[in-house]
Length: 366
Image (cartoon, rainbow, N blue to C red):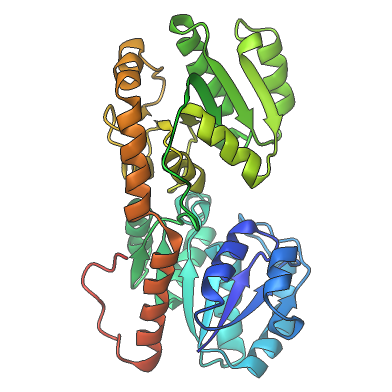
């Protein structure tokens, strides 16, 4: 069974999907940009097409659409069973247009990444219409949270499989932690609210003056955040370490007792899953997808808008931190590994391709 990934071939997320799919079917990839070295090594040149555009993932992708004839001709030659579009506003549109314009027999599978469902359709009537059009054209969709899956169904999706964009490898069970070490690695951009992380940590330092915060990653807000910290009461308690390799990031997860992720909008975050797997106690913003991972006060904290961590809550969780770490690691092992989910996804593709899966499975949740 031939499947063509359509997405950003320079994205580590698409590389991760390709690694999981390649052993299970005859895999091809069309990239709106170029290809990351790992993806180029995985697929031979004849199974790759680089469109070399610069997509705007919020929409308005006229440059991407101008590459449609090149994509359509290539797909017509391959004659795949499935087009698997990642990020529905841009690449989903490309898949739908190619299928219709070149009369492809392929069915379309669409994988939502978060903002393409949770943010983009709210920006304009046109983008909402476009999102609906793509979802209705997909025979099968995937979502990494139950909340986003419901939004997709409300926008017209037919069948949605829900599973976390989980881990490829489970880290060892958590060991000794630095009890007052906090770690955060979301982008230093407005949507991830790093200013709120610093405000929450400032409140914590008032009760735990020996607490430390390590902020990884980068973004447009980093210079302003560093300046604010430099002139604040927590100047000697915060470190900005920039973008990290996977190994370096894993070391901080391993050491840190606590993990911050306070975005304004998000689906289930891979970073949060990694933190849970390494036994960190998560402190998360109050979003529906986060509540699928954390029971407030039990295996982490959920901070509603404007709420700062409460000293009593932190102390209560610190006493149980080793048990929470063990339980969070076990939950990821049972519920959030990527390979088993992809295995179920591919089985569903086979069933739909052969016509044996035309009746929608009960629940549609992987």
